[in-house]
Length: 211
Length: 211
DNA sequence: ATTATCTATAGATCTATAGATAATGC
DNA sequence: ATTATCTATAGATCTATAGATAATGC
Image: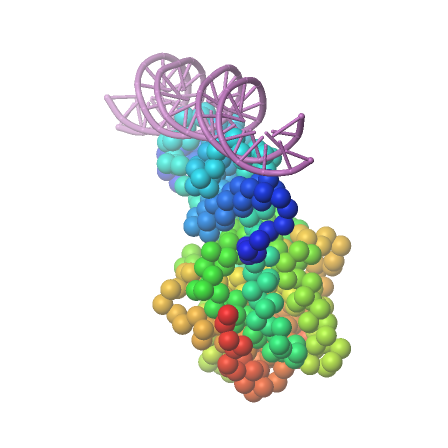
């Protein structure tokens, strides 16, 4: 998320730091309550930034919160991407993608709470993971691994299911999230055309280690 | 939604009408923008109700919008329920439930926009359709129609997928919604253990006529 | 007599901006 | 000299309530 030495001169770095402080505050708020009716004043205070500075970077609250969602989504993409980079089989990619994302509810709660609140609108967005997921789905189809008529519909199922799983972990704190994620991965793989036994096997394989 | 002669004396009916006007205004706002930062004053104006009356019925904006979501959800439940009442086979119930809901995006846009914005939090709620859906899933399992390890996880997939489909219709207005819904129903039935050919057949059956 | 609605308003809060201050580039 | 941040504030808006008005029950 933060590279150690951002580019630009000291001016640009200070400016970027102020902007980032605002985005980080917005992310916290999105994750904690999802309530964006908080005042700009309160946001600036939380960011420890002068009130007027807000308008140096954003035109409105909605503008800031959009940037915060984009920021969290990018971080999510990088994290998932880093973990999945070794995998080739589309079935393994889908399974690991679902299970890693579920695991991130614990390791990266802020990001996943933001996705739970705002993720639905990103499922089919050209930013975010949609293009990658679509590409993997289509690769699975051409290789014969998957049987899917409409990749966009399958993407709706995968993305929506993941949000449903995040919500399940939130509504029912008692259930075992890893187990639920394995279950879901198995169901989704079977849906995509992987034989049930193989789907179960893949969904229970050890994950690539978490960074 | 509105029975022609609500109970109670004229006082209670007038009171109920005022409350309903506020709820209807809140529903419109939720459906149009989903932005709940609108002022109470603006809500009262839209409801054509005196500003102070708001506080006779609700303690806060959040309180009103919660009531509006509950109201829309109940109406959704009634509509779906009415259409599915003739069906017995759990597989047909799942398929028709998905396809009818997708169709309601056109016939009942306000309700479905509200669900798109607020539905995720209702997937596992004891209000709403969750109990019914869970019961149908479990009936399908005991009758051997479905193969499902964790009904709550399956419910997450069904509910999340439906929201993903609503979102798809919204992000890609060009695609054929009915066809997408048939596709999704087929995929979900297969996931639940229905053989693919049969799943396709069921997902393409004519729906019970829309009221 | 009772109850709900409506109007008016006080006080609080919020937004957007103007002007002063501080930091950096050249 | 330039640029961003910070402080202060004017004006707008919003919330919650108090008191007046209208409708109904008995």
